Amino acid sequence: MSYALLSGQQPRLFRDEIQWSCFIADRDLIQCSHQPHDAYIHTFLEATVDKRLHNALRDLHTFSCISNLAYQTTRKLSPDIYSDIMTSILYRLTSLSYESDPLQEALRVGLLAISSTIFMQRQFMEHPYDNLLNLHRKSLLKLRESTDIDIPVPILLWLTMLLHVVENKEPSLPDWLSVWLDEVIFCAGIDSWPQAHEILRSMVWVNFVHNRCGMPAFEAAMLRLEKTPK
Picture (tube, rainbow, N blue to C red):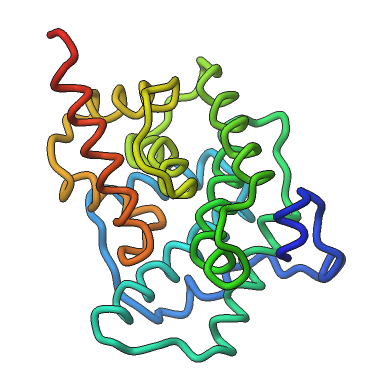
C-alpha cells in the first residue's frame, strides 16, 4: 500500500475480491452527531456520488470520531482492528477512479491524502507522498475550474483546507488554493476556528493529527480576509 501511494499504481492485493460495503460505519461503534452539517453532507453525497466512495467516506468519518474519542479517554484501538480498518479503506480508495468526474475524483484523492496522515505517514515516512500531493493539487484545480458543481460548504471547506494539513507546512504566500479557501470561509460566514473545526469534524478530522496544521491555516486565512478591502 505504501508503494501504491508513492507510485500512483494500484495495489496488487484484493484486486478481485474487494468488499465495497461499509466496514465500520454501520456497526454502531460510536454515536456521533455534527448537526446540522452531517445530514446535509450525506443527503448530498447519496444523491451525487458513487455509493462505494460514499461508503469509504463514512468509514473514515467513523474512524476519525472513534480516534477522537479514544484520544480523549486515553484508550487505544487494538492493532488488528486498526490494520483491518486501514486495509479496508485504503484498498477501496486506491481501486476507484473518477477521471471524468471532478468532484468524485477530488473527494477520492482527498480521502486518500488525509488517510496517509492517519494511517501511513507517521509509520513509514517523515514526509508526505509527493505523487499523492501532486495528484491532490491537480484534482482540486480541476474541481476549481468546474463551474457546474454546487458543493455544500462543509465539503468545500474540508477540501480547500485539506492540502494545508497534508503538506504539513507553515502557511506560505497566498496561491489559488488559499484564495479559494478564503472565498469559502467568507461565503460561509465563518469567523472563528471552533466554527470551522466543527464543520471539518463532520467530514474526516482527527483532532490530535490535523489541528496542528489546520488551525494555523485557518488563522492565516482570517488574517488575509481582514486585509482584504471591503
